[in-house]
Length: 292
Image (cartoon, rainbow, N blue to C red; front, side, top):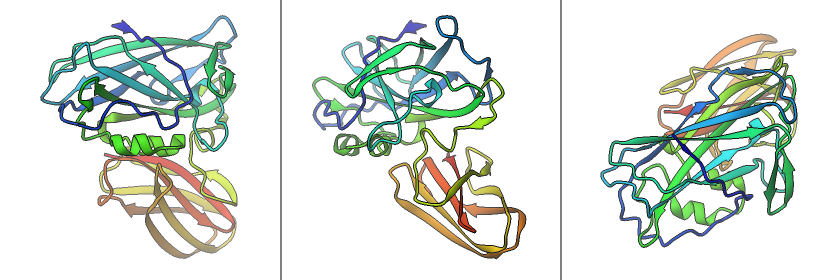
């Protein structure tokens, strides 16, 4: 395994390379650690660290060469670093060491992040403060470019959208498929404070917000969701992509008070991450899911 060289910065619209896009390298990323539903003790400053392990794969027809540049972008929700300004995510950009990954090959990178560690962002210093007794969700993306040819011709990365991004959410919209991976329900201590609907989640508007249970996740066809109403009310389901664009709505009509289980077909959506919201009785039930 190789240790990641770290380049830190709050990502905006970074212009990296030309747009020739004629090197066919299909990158993939997978978070090996932490994993879904992993539980940690509440971390102590100077004592505890979280080890991140990232599997980088190359499913294209060309090899990744040592002269190529690979960049991983991590959502810092699990590090307790809150978003700032117009961004709803705080991001960490990591430049990898020189790698050679043959077509069909893979490599594993790792780094440690400790409680109390200070990161330098363009907007100022930020300190890791893992949220105690909380549950968080986070995700990672990857892209690459050749210094002569520009961004890789990678089906899971849109270089034009990346360069046009002015917020973190718009930047994340440039990634889909195996160029993006997420980890859900990482618990610190009891996990009682659910932050999966807060830090790192796109806001849709007014109204009280509550967590929405969705399954299966990832999903191919029908996404199921459960919610509970105190009063009978009209209910509407809305799905948006990570750039905030509405891609699907469904009117559930008048729904009685009590617990409900519904489903919505998402088979026509592209592969990637989405947000789902149920609006009813002045409440907003919010969650995220991956369409695989």
